[in-house]
Amino acid sequence: MVFSTKLFREIDKLEPDLKAVMLEMLSEIERNREESITRKEFLEFARQSEENFQRVWKSIDQLAEAQKRTEQRVDTLAARMEELAEAQKRTEQRVEELAEAQKRTEQRVDTLAARMEELAEAQKRTEQRVEELAEAQKRTEQRVDTLAARMEELAEAQKRTETSLAALTAEHKKTREQLGGLSATVGYTLENKAFKALPDLLKADYGITLKGKLIRDHIPDNQGDEIEVNILGKGERDGKEVLIVGESKSQLSAKYIDEFIRKKLNRLQGIHPNLFPVLVTHMVSSSAVKRYAKEKGLALYFSYQF
Image 1: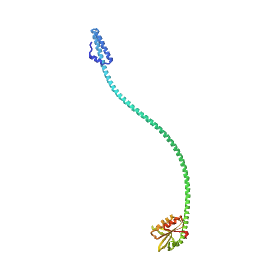
Image 2 (image 1 turned 120 degrees about the vertical axis):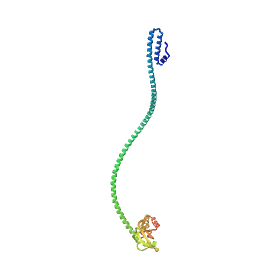
Image 3 (image 1 turned 45 degrees about the horizontal axis):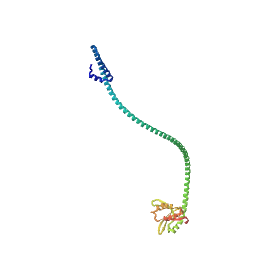
Image 4 (image 1 turned 90 degrees about the horizontal axis):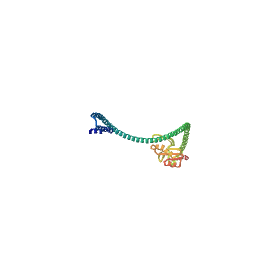
């Protein structure tokens, strides 16, 4: 019995195990064909062979469908495997990134741990400093309390001092009044002597002849106000009238000379022509005062000349 080429091509497509079975079956058929059999046996054999072939072809079709499905599943699995491979690749890349991030995190944690140690030490020092400041504050408060008590004592002492000072001020005022009265008395005494002696002295030294007596009086100044003049009188020299203006001072100084010029002579300039200034004193504060009085054009007399 000759088998067709198509049959062999179909068998060749089968799986190796199934292919071996089919070839063995064909060999068995060929052997049986070669043996001498009866027509009836041959027909029976042919029928059985046909049934067997039908079952085989059915199995082959089923296997072909299963193979097709298997190949489809394999393709699907291959595609899935590619996806999984890509996913695995991304996962591995992500794991690497996470590993690097973890490494950096650990480094930061180490840095933070070191910083925490530093902060802990700093906190410890701060707490120690706070304790020291608390102690210092306590001592300061104690000192403040002591100073407050001392201030109270000083306030009381100040109060007593002010009371004593008020009493001393009152006494000083009385003393000044007494000294003022004494000074005025001394001044008046000196001026009274000058009133008697100056007419002859002025006549002899400056050629001034008095017209009337020397007096104490108030006269108007160039501002329209009145000023007190302690030695005042009119006289004549070389046919011209002069106004004698003077003061007395127990101890004469250059400062008083300037004050006399500023407060008396300057205020009389312009309305009282031909002023003749005179100063009388018991003594001067220095020998330079006499020269200074002469430089300023003042007539100076001492009490011992009276």
